[in-house]
Image 1 (cartoon, one colour):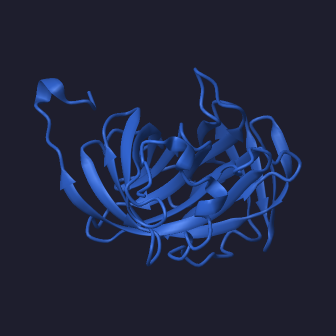
Image 2 (cartoon, rainbow, N blue to C red; image 1 turned 180 degrees about the horizontal axis):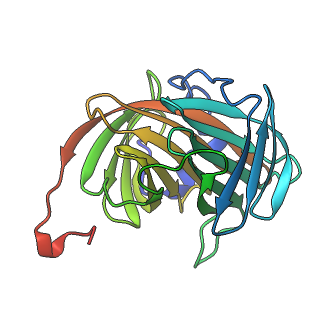
Length: 264
């Protein structure tokens, strides 16, 4: 008997998705080791001190020492990701742009979903790097992805498509893998880091999880992303946190009538 895809109780939990999902993850780098970053933001100062394996950090009312992974997104642009050992329901993403003297902190907090809130909440704090020359555009929320339909390949057996609908919503569909045939529309937030490079975050309502990705869309035939997933295990008792990567390509772009454009 075929699986009833409309029965969300059959959907795969986050810890069931993890095996093999990270096959296209980029190699980690140690370029941030030996660097201490002080970030000025509207929410207050933040500090991040990296060595080869750990980051000592204080930001947004939290602090600690954590093992981290770092990825090179583009020239002098890095994405670092870690989970807080003292607060395992907190995961941190940090984007640092050394060329332009800018940074973006994203705190993902894991709690209980309710009728009015999702299990994962993201806090965004853009800022500037002390001691670096600040250039170019500030890191701000962006509507540039709206209308795009992108195919993402995470491994030889995991593929999805994303359709970016509005500043609030996107639709995903699994094209290959254990979730094949599943689809939903979930909450998203997008920031532009550099022209053509975006932080894309989402928060799912069926599976209690959320994601932070950094995606380079400058070549729409060879898009590259680096990301993390964070949520509850199947029992809802332990956080699950892992990093991944994907190769993407633009499938199509929807052009709305100017007076109906959801990005306005």
